Image (cartoon, rainbow, N blue to C red; front, side, top):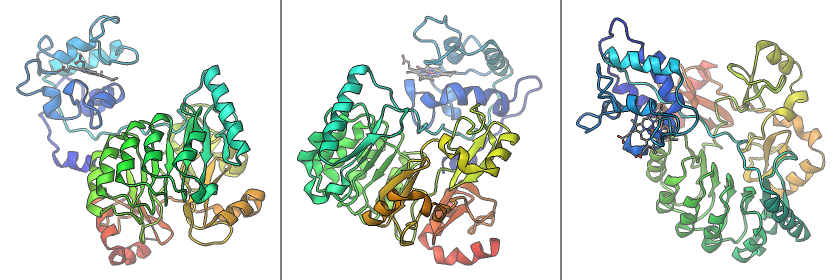
Length: 461
Ligand code: HEC
């Protein structure tokens, strides 16, 4: 949505003879080194470098860039400060390289020609989880032992990671706010917590504010209301929140606007309105909100899920990819892709764990899944229709594995609303298939009345 709004205001300054090109040479420096703090999501020092007004600071006392005048350009001064100066920009990482400084210098001297760039914010890395100190590990292990005694599902997410996942869902209504005290000792380690179907309410949810590492929280069918959600604003890493079947309303979503990393929000069967969902979506770039109805679970992220090649272990080239079990996998080179394609299962273990279920029908019963009932299997999250099916699957996953291939890659190449080529990040799941759109506006038009466009999709395949 953002890139559309920005490209509408596209504005091209006359190209000078000798300066570097803004979009291809200068903007990549800002995008790589400055935009996380001075872009759409954060405005450190009240400065945005992705807009004309921000960059040229019209009317400001110290404009960041004064075209043609290096000395008057505050930005130039700040990127050239000595390495130990606290005001040096960028505020994190290494100073800009000589080559980058030279490009900036020549660009400002040539009159700083500007065009509206498209802003791509980096996705949070799902594997960037904390490591613990020895003391924290001891507290974690004591808590895991205590939970195991009580029959609670609690374990490390992966053998080589310090972090843990806990599900209290099996305890159903016998688990309430008081039982959350069992989690003491897991504060820095708990990344996934499933409380679905329990009787946990507002005071329990507020108490979760101490679990700062939480990424994925399932509160489906709990007693939480708007008041409890205030506590979640204190969870900076939260990427997925399931509120399915709770009494939450639009008002409860307001504190969630602080969760810059939130990517998935499930509000099916709640009091959240389309308008309330849209308001939150406007504040949080990259958030997918599932309001249910005919629209199934949200599609998998359209970018590659991995940063290192599952075959060679080297950094990936994002242009060399395969679709595998509903996720996009990137490789370092064509050769590795070919090896993977020939026998994907043997490399599946090397892929990062997925955080969201990728299947919509239960691999055991064939019925629609309850996103709250999941197991992890070969690095992905598998959902089931009920606990019984989950138990059958857990006992012998291999015998159900082939039912799991349901790629969430769009089935269509042209937008069913506009007829233009699709942007795979703009998609919804409709009747078990992933449908792509050219832009967020067309996606919204489809969601408002999918039947109107169904013919166009069938023609495209
Ligand atoms: C990690 C966050 C971070 C990054 C990355 C970063 N900045 Fe900053 N920047 C800040 C903060 C914080 C301030 C406010 C400092 C203050 O007010 O004391 C600031 C202030 C500025 C200012 C002065 C704004 C004003 O008018 O007071 C400029 C210009 C600036 N940054 C440019 C850049 C450029 C150019 C880059 C990339 C090369 C960059 N920054 C990268 C955090 C960052």
